[in-house]
Image (tube, rainbow, N blue to C red):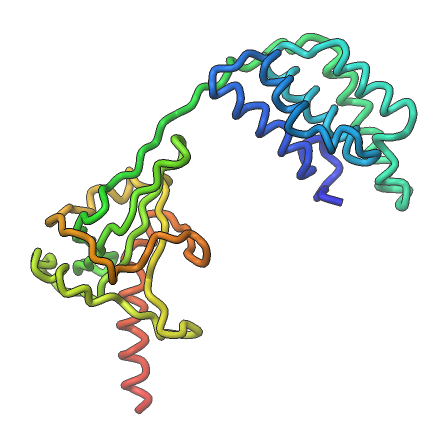
Length: 262
């Protein structure tokens, strides 16, 4: 099962229901409309003997959190508990069953009363990508030298999690990279440790940008080429901004290490 603990929110489906519910609220929907939307979205789960009770638990938790738990939803949770449906997944282990039963009893007791500290309805926080495609970045590295990176794409598909695809160039110098260097497209190829001549291409979200911002400077903007790496997300990792440029240091250190052994 998709549970990693006995807690109410230690289950994949419960978290999915709550997440979907909050997504609808962020779009400006009311509690009633968000409820209708997730019931449609999780219609198959509701009809499933194992997933149905988890759906109602997740919906109840979400509604109660925002101060509007519907009596019909509470009845579903109570009936599933009384009938044993919400405990059936835990019957193989007596100890786990006992812990889960205790958790559900406390949960039902809690949500049976109005939430004294209900949350305000969430709203979407727009976090746009930090750079435009073609931006040429000078990166102040941790060792005090400068690296270079080229912004290959800006993803606006999720308003809250705008992202930039950035390719790091093979550059490390006491001086900032000159604008003309970016036209050469000398990509950093990773061969250190277990890397197999891979380009350093990474999607960067907003996380950690504020701390990294003083170390970044747009030197120029160039037109992207058809030969540039494409912004397909599959197989390309995500990282925090503090990671940007780190690989060029490791790659140079690896080269020095190999030369000492030769």
